[in-house]
Length: 244
Image 1: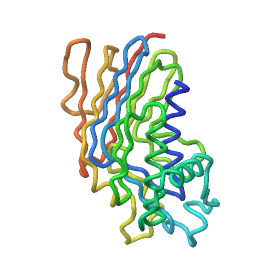
Image 2 (image 1 turned 60 degrees about the vertical axis):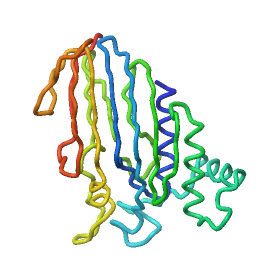
Image 3 (image 1 turned 90 degrees about the vertical axis):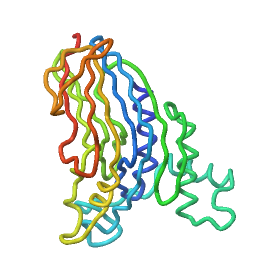
């Protein structure tokens, strides 16, 4: 689990620089949870980084509730250093493009990232997979120091034998409270790019779930598939009963 958190944190730490909203684009994502608490998670597809500066604040030096913007991080410095060493920014590439390329290079070296490629226009192509045992709750992506956190998937341990899965990033319910009234902001623009599937498989008891077609029987358990589009207003959610 510690490895999972470190790798997921690396993604958010890079992409949530300078008050960015990190959201899915076109993607396929899976989560498998066994009754014995073994799990595996995958995300394959696009991640979009949208600048939140200027939304919900009177100046570019603060965001949201007026907290000072964290403009740098150790991982950011490392990414940019690697970018300079590997020649990103040469040949006329802008500073912003060089930063994005450096971030992709840094992510590709992190545990769990089978590949990370910058596509341009603040879009990354990610192939991420990790497995472990549920001894603690986890988020993907995760960063405790980020000014803005929109977890794609959150798994929370509740009591001694229940696990709640919620995927707020796989819906159009982004926090738009930071956007000036009457203006189209990053949350609204990001929602338009949603295009994917989130599949939960398990052999644990399904206590509740919000996919209207319900769970399907498969070899080794049950499967729930949520189709995610710009019209998806309710985040995928399920509660499972696992072994204590």
